Amino acid sequence: MVESASMKTTRARKNLGDSGERIAALFLEQRGYKIIARNWRSPTRIGELDLIAEDADGLAFVEVRMRRGNAMGTPEESLTYRKRQRLIRLAQEFLQAHAECADRAWRIDLVAIEVDRAGKLGRMEVIKSAVEE
Image (cartoon, rainbow, N blue to C red; front, top):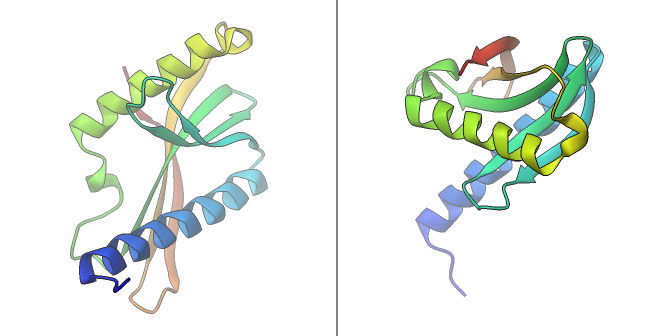
């Protein structure tokens, strides 16, 4: 099978996203978070949560946004209203599916990662409560 340009772009984007999630998980662990799930998929198939972690403040549903270069804006700018609403719905679905977590405090954090065209890390930051109900 011959791979089209769009297939290569999709694969490259997935690889970038996967590496961003691995880097973000390590970054969070170094800051006291405990990763409890990766790539949790919604039973209603509306999407997935990149990372679910816990820290002293409760559960953190973590969205990882990685950008190479700045042509498409910052990672924070890529978190659209629609994506924010989906993350809230996903967090609520997770809590409904896991009764043991239902009474815990929770929030949605963002890990923003910027790398240059060569892949060198430029910036990585955790933004707590980046998405609010």
